[in-house]
Image 1 (cartoon, rainbow, N blue to C red):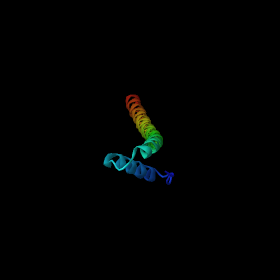
Image 2 (cartoon, rainbow, N blue to C red):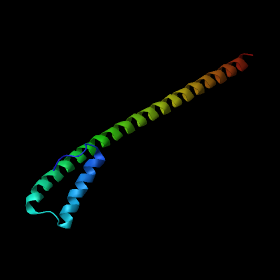
Image 3 (tube, rainbow, N blue to C red):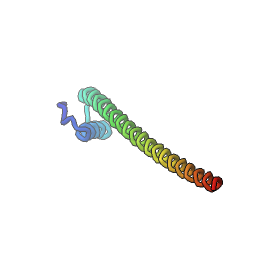
Image 4 (cartoon, rainbow, N blue to C red):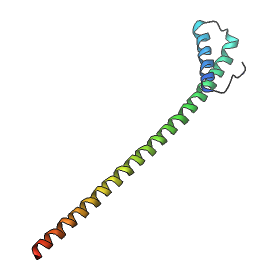
Length: 100
């Protein structure tokens, strides 16, 4: 059997057709071995492609979480700096009131 397009969907369709032929019993023993081998090749290729996609999704999520954490840290630092500035301002006011 010749290879179809290398697209994921084309490979999936081909694998589904092979499975259908096995399930329907419309395949003879001579064809079965070749079809079985092709089915395993397709399944391995699809699994590899899905693993690549899964790894990429994980990578994107990690970048998003890292960026989100960094933004939260920066916000917390900015808030802390503002609080310190306000505290210093209040302390200065208290000292001035004590002096005068």
